[in-house]
Length: 254
Image (cartoon, rainbow, N blue to C red):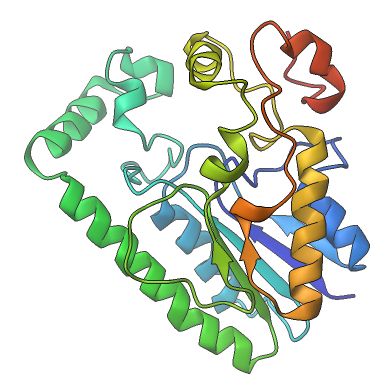
């Protein structure tokens, strides 16, 4: 049986016991096994590395499908053994031991942001990563392997992803943010000291929307325009969350 390979960040990370995740739904429809090597909070360099490890071992075979969800350009893979420590803005006001880091490691990250990091270098790294995926797209296509690269965020780039299916838009702009009733509801939701209660930052119904769209695009070789899918939107806020339990992760609920 052919396989669906998933790489990315929290938009693709596996939630054990949740069988309605978008890629599990897609795998079932297309009669594929699946494996997910996505993880929370990781940077694009780490996502690439996980794919390269499998590619070099010859894990992908003819008829397989590889889906990559890229993440925000501002994330960096600072520490080899702590790939989820990638977003300085979210950790700069917290003690290092919250992230299993030493004070010296935290200081090194602070110095990087002070003396090296810039919007220009972030954009350049993202463009380089995109060009890298495009190069592998040709290799995979020649081997009869499907590749789809889905932007998690709307990172500014002049380089378009070249996969089996072309993708427009980003998951954050097309579905994650629009699921909230308004900007204020989203700000208050993320301000609380709890993780996002949605699986892959999407309500359950929208997992099916994404899976169905991906299946159609793979079958018909058409462009996936995330901004034009029939998403369920303007539902979520702190007050409506208790009424949406069937749409949320059964394991994260408090």
